[in-house]
Amino acid sequence: MTQAPRDEALIDAVDALLPQTQCGKCGQPGCRPYAEAIVAGEAINRCPPGGQRTVERLAELTGRPALPLAEPAQEPLVAWIREDECIGCTKCIQACPVDAILGAAKRMHTVIADECTGCELCVAPCPVDCIDLLPHPAWQAARSDAERDAYLARRAEKGRQRFQARQRRLEREAREKRLERQRRLMRQRQRPSAAGSSRGAAQPRQRQMAVKAAEQALKRVRQQLESARRRGDSEAEATALGQLPEAERLLAEARKALEEAQKKD
Image (cartoon, rainbow, N blue to C red):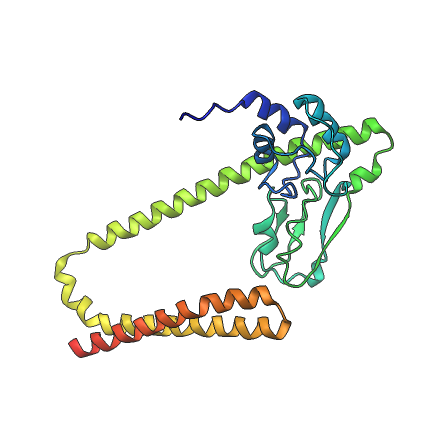
């Protein structure tokens, strides 16, 4: 059975009505995926940043009933990092769907307010809870419906462009990593066979390094388990417990490989 072709024109039209916050509150990983889901039959009332007005526009476009919002409507927000409390972990940078946060590892981070969509995705990953969500100043400064509509249109266009640019960047970085892995494998295969004796001599040392790495990995899992239990975080505890057998297995295998290498030596 062949799959019916997607209605790209309708997807584009639906996407044009969405606020482009890329927040995921609709259950999809962005506004474009939600537009695709709507065309495929998904409910049209799952966009809190769009509000009831967006539901009504989607209803008019699709011919469906304008249901009440599934979640309370949300006015435009902006993320604000309390910079003196920031530890430079980069977790918020990685979470931002529109690359609106500047910073580097162990350096203070800051939000580009004009580019921030108020998606809230940076808040949860922050380990020190130093990110606030505030009413967006551009929204507060608007004095009429026309000014508010103009702001929402600018935010939507920027949000769409920056989301697409980020997706392209992530795809490019993934390709580069795959190519680098392939290059490393090719270099390893092209090493002269005459080096076999030196590799044999180095094998016990490599096995020892593998054992140390496995010991450190097991230690980290146990520390994470202890930390989760102290905090009463059942989800983190379950995750650590799930990782523990694998870490123990890897250590046992590394020790066995070291013993075999030492016997051969």
